[in-house]
Length: 122
Image (cartoon, rainbow, N blue to C red; front, side, top):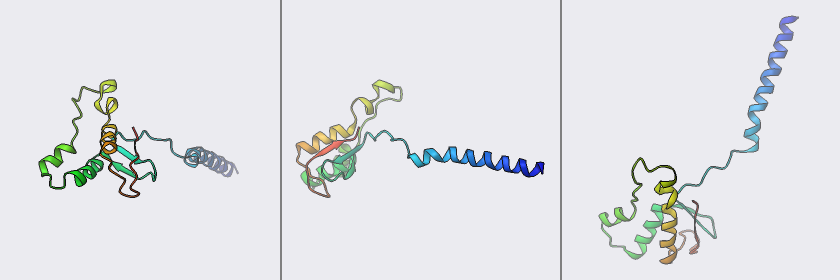
């Protein structure tokens, strides 16, 4: 009889523990910080990378660009390893904002809907 009672108590503790662990899964995951390289269309919410945005610009305005020109336009310097925290290049001047300004100025539309409404996620 005592072994049955201990099994029941052990089962209840395990089920309570599993319920406690599953509640955060039911509520949903916490929102993660958006990437500093991500852009989103303002009309259709199509998400592109900053590198893809620069390739859209190159494809439209510089179709005959060389490989070196393409790589120089799609590469960003991230600074030194010691530049972390408030001086981190990705935090103070994320590439997505710079690419957004370039795309808006050049009137580069979204590949899905054609709108020129880019929003930087960072």
